[in-house]
View 1 (cartoon, rainbow, N blue to C red):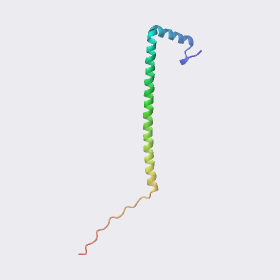
View 2 (view 1 turned 180 degrees about the vertical axis):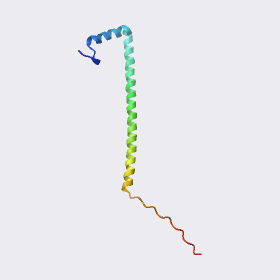
View 3 (view 1 turned 135 degrees about the horizontal axis):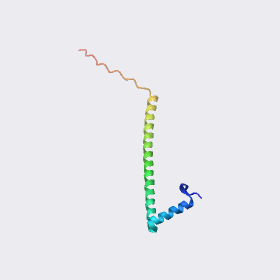
View 4 (view 1 turned 90 degrees about the vertical axis):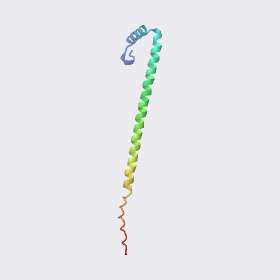
Amino acid sequence: MTLLFDISGGEFLLVLVFVLMFFGSKGIPEMARAAGRFMRQVRDASNEVQREIQRGADEVRRTAMEQQRKVTSMVEEPPVPPTPPEKPAKDPG
């Protein structure tokens, strides 16, 4: 019978006996709570990293779309030629 991490049943029982002897029956629940808190912190941190990555990707996507719109509008609209400056009227007098 193979269990988690390729540990057989006998090896798993030996580990359980060692943990029970080392931590005692009262220490195991506290150890399990600490492991649970740690796993929750890891999961929360992982979720926060994923949210930050998604925000960054959304910002890059939004900037790229704005640049694409600018380029498209420049291609579709012909450039307006500059108007020559007006010459001042000569004073007849």
